[in-house]
Length: 128
Image (cartoon, rainbow, N blue to C red; front, side):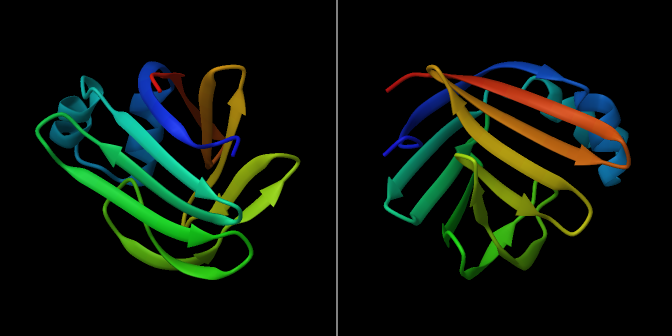
């Protein structure tokens, strides 16, 4: 499936401002700025397992089915229920205080998150 693969962060835009808008403390923002993030996605039809491994061994995994309510973990570590959608080939989710889209562009995973007019973009290159 289009999203299945392993990706390593390559670039970010507006990291600091986005994380401030999320309400993360300055020390957490500073620590996270240099994380090497590996995203591993397993897609089986409409079912996804989306894992992100951070420097230091922390792993965050979300399992969801497109169009069905699922429990999701946010970047800030909170849990909530959401229905993830597929729109024009993009995985789309509305988190409690931000909107996120993810798509595959060539061999890259492009994640766009928006909060209060600030857009954070994270681009990851395909490893496998």
